[in-house]
Length: 28
Image (cartoon, rainbow, N blue to C red; front, side):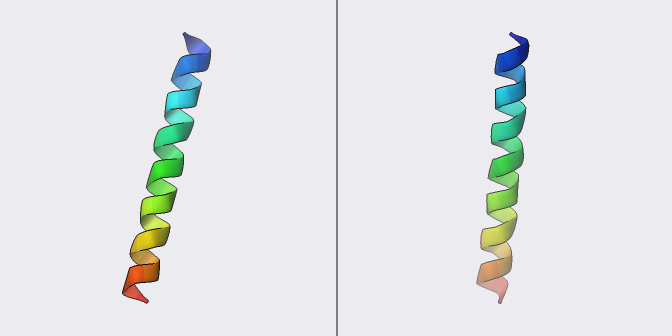
């Protein structure tokens, strides 16, 4: 369960990073 939680956390963080990158790219 711990591994699954870590994976989920990583997925969320990566998703947020990608969303921020796309937002910045769009704004630029």
